[in-house]
Image 1 (cartoon, rainbow, N blue to C red):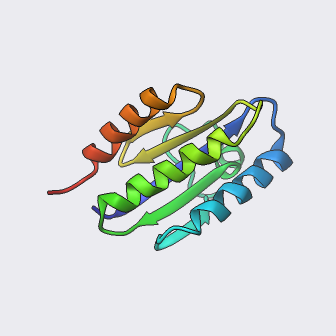
Image 2: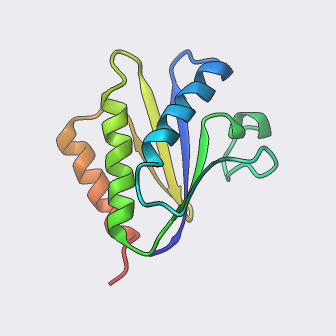
Image 3: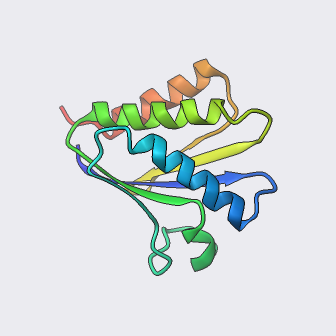
Length: 126
């Protein structure tokens, strides 16, 4: 399994500056993993379904994954852990691989683990 994972971060009531700050924090957490690349979306290439070029660039990260399903599971786990540290802020991270999407936010740990397992299994080979 190799490919590009797109992330779109949002927080209720966040302005552009806040989204940029949060995206930087999440990027720093993800850089601790064994990823080939973690970069901000380029404003000229918004993902499908984005509402505009400027909005797509805010809160967006593109990750180049290696060849194992374990790295995808580690990424999703790191995002889930990051969301749990958000305190009272309502944050959401939407993940997308090849048009398949998973949205992580404030759901129970059990439900979130179930959704993560399904997402990872759909993008695992062998």
